[in-house]
Image (cartoon, rainbow, N blue to C red; front, side):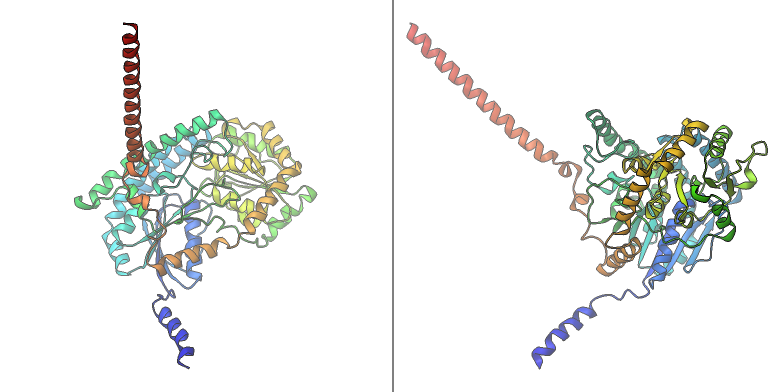
Length: 525
């Protein structure tokens, strides 16, 4: 009998040392609106639905969702709003940025400007002692943060919380996270390359890879002042320290879109949180779609934060192109901002907000016209819908290059859109069945994953809490000096040894030549 009880006693002892995850207290931090908020909202909902006690700390006002009414949340929310004057300035700045995007001038400098703005806002957050003290008193076990705004790391550190970072923009910060990224087949951010590069493309990619170090330095410089101001002189971390301190990195992408590349154990992909089985559309939308007959309809949405097109000539060209296709068009566009002197195409319906996921799941959907955000593209893949991209900023160019490489769509920069070529591109993708075939192939890849994205999210978060952190997942390279990590000391040692060996060989050869010449002279004498 004693032998029969021993295994049971062992199991009970082991179970007594496993922390209970019921009701783990989790803080999510989101300081942006748009797709970033939608992603972090879904993260918070999933964790709350799985029995955890979740609170989101979010900022109200920066990058809100035009036309979208925020639903009630099952989780608690602590919010902070900037003053009206600042928000008004932010709105004017965003309009200016939109104009630059549509004019094709949204380069890397725009990213630096955004980071500078983030750092200015971060100083304000860090001075909100009432909110920070309240959050600290709640004694959360872990924070989950939107990593695009580096200030979320500073807030987590200020609260003394371990944290999991979620990147909404694919592998933008591969250097800071320490991801192996061989330039021979891993395209660098903003390189606009695929994983199959010619010699000249690999040369370009290599230069851009090393240029990425300068980008990280500029981001670091943007936050240096706020870090110096709010952390003690004897323990001031860098942005790199913050990034590498994350217990886990979760990326909002999937290999149905992304090119295959090496990852580390503490890096996981959970793309597809917002892609779900479609619900029925409203009766009025259903009636509009029904009028399309066998031609079906297309959805046009240039991102959650862009509800209008500030470049009027672009608006006119797009509207004219829609008038010359056979499909119905559901266009997310703020109706009150439509120009009075532009007659809307008869087959177009404007909507302040669209439930894109439900529309993409409709059997009559033929095409998504999108800016190329990861959330939109993952929804398109989930429902097997071809894509025509209009990239505007940031990772959207690279995302759409991946869609084209997967043969499920094409893209046109906004500066190149004319009525004829835009209508031709729509007709080509809708009528050429190879795009739909490729989209369905990518859909099968996404949907047949062993573990859905929400299960991965919950499983990894609970694993980090239960195991007391992600130290066992992080590589030792985080602790190595740079010269050790890149084997410069080993290379120097080997080079020195080779130099000594070559020196000795040369000396021996010279000695042999000298001896041989001496013998020859003696014989001649």
